[in-house]
Length: 589
Image (cartoon, rainbow, N blue to C red):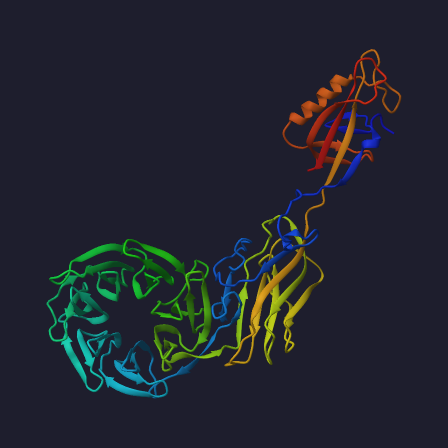
């Protein structure tokens, strides 16, 4: 046996052994809850619940205050039944009798959908069959359409000849803009009391704009600095032109107001990183596709703001965004799905989702809404097609959550179970759950709910599964083209925190002894320090930064933090005057 019970910072001390305590350190302070009990009030387990999926994609880490957000997903619908997770819409493919490399733009006129091709033809789709309406024989293809004063107008990518159709007869060149190398953007716009068709023309060095009143093409009204106007949209009392320079990979915004004498033109801002390729007005704002890394920007009349970018340094986005439309109260954009096909991106003001992928086509083209259906045009050599929704759902869809760490990234978690709540499953329907630890490696299937009529499922983790971070993937499946979808209402993860084991101590240190009557050590020898000197040594140690060395009763040595120190007068003293006891708290470093 040594001379002391313990030593701290190299100084030995005697203890009141009745007050000695050593236990596991509780890393978290107790909380007081109010109101109804929730999962956060569980004593031993933690819980993470998702009961709303509308937050959309793009969030690599779980934010417990926004459980509705997730990292990635394809083929899912979070909008038909707000809050639940369903399979996205099925799109059926249809194509003209003659194969083409590209279907470019489409517009509804006279109860039919008119679709342009990259070979300069215009086809009519009545909801059941295709019919050739006209072959304009323009190598640059059909690039723009507009309806004005009861006629359909069609621009091309070769020259300034704009065709018109009155429902019976085509006029191959209703008017021609001299010097134009194509007409890719047209829009109707009221100026004072009359409506005009504004025709934005491409040029060899710079683009320009005319307006047409149904009988006369006015003289050139304005020159742009960039060569190719791509988008013309009305917002408020101005018509905006979004003009690009694909070779220079830049663009700019121009506008004309609704005043008399042709209106007043204005150059607004430049777009230095990309050029506009498509656009739509939704919820009082213009949304633009940008021909650089799949960028989507907004324009409200004052500034361009990037709101979404599909490409990243690790996964560049190839191609251009070419189709935008408003359908079902949301903005839809046709995109390359990253797997050699075409998909759909949806934005509802809350989040971005991808309800459809895998559509036949190597590049996306225009979007249109016809008979309540969303129609998607594509480019594919010898196999361009139009895909349209038909009220059924696709066969598969999935959502990947962000990495979950309970806002404690350094603390281990023991994963216990996942609980699903969903609508009664129909024949062939299922909901699977996969997990991946620390954001790397392969996905592991935890379980699948596939029993007809089932409404809940609990999947326990096999054995002891520990991690600091975990991500999950929900897999929805059902018959392709089915009328109904599996519908997930609620998803719950049960886990337990497993922080690193640390010890803590409570000690009562005897701070006794005088020169005349020293403290007697365990080996019977007198302590050389007096009570005040032992006290001073403790207080000096407490003032030092960093951990110190502690030798315990069992002679084990550990680095510890001296977390608390206070002195109290000893209850009984066998000496004259007073003696103190040091109340010490230690935490393993």
